[in-house]
Picture 1 (cartoon, rainbow, N blue to C red):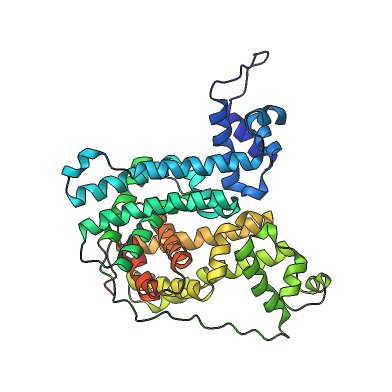
Picture 2: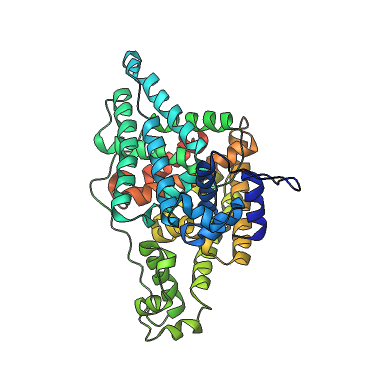
Length: 415
């Protein structure tokens, strides 16, 4: 965490004392620590933050921090479990809701879930992308909490749409949860009421989506064949696989070399400067895949909606082809070298802006910020449905494309 970030965290949490002022220990110190750690973990990742960083950001000593929490893991665990409980509590309907219509009950569940997500936006980032660093028993509990949220969404959706089969319910409830929690993947700003209204409308569109027929069996992904002699590409592919399976901090250069069939880690350095250079190369590929598609799609289309449909098609196809890379792009961004991070953020920002510009031509009622939120929700849908269902036919490319169109346009595409 940079010195500037620590100063900002300290000012945000404590304020700067006047000269000679005696600082009293605040009564809500534990809550302040939890909020500061959630922000730090969300920005830098679990492995990128130390107890010293958190203490410095709060303007307290490490010893004072350890009086409240015995370890970094204790902080991390408590915050994830707290938000998991907040989300499961949010979807618990009161007894009087039995008198309401199915539509009213589903809307009530969505509104409460959205409110809890907005209130805990920083920590929802951890739930989405860092939960795998929990110890097995704690990870199982977090999974139970998420399953409980999905269960309530599925139950209420079934009451509203009894014609849906089990797989259709699984897909649509996952899509709704993805749209809600996608706000944790970016820093676009909107007033809370505007976010809540936009997400509620998007979720309702997804809830009412008419899905294409499910394909009869799983579709095996095309095997990626890389000649052993093409070591540059093979190293990149194997590194992304390992980062996906185990997390960037838990993978060594030696393991990457072994996976690529190299005799020693030193051989990696003939192609890349190190592990972080491999990650940056993978991220450049992911970012340029999205940005590079925009110009040709706009040039070939006869309308802004047509251009966006083409971009959605290409984004879905690219994500299906490189599932590991799509996941790693969200989970390991903080480990990219700072200078590369700036370049990648600029590429992503410009891509989102162009998608949002096209979307506003289709939906002029959206503000620029609302359009950006929806674009991020569309991206999240593709990645989340891929990691939830893999190659199950219930979430094939046709269905995923339709759901992204529904999230962005508020309906399936007309072109």
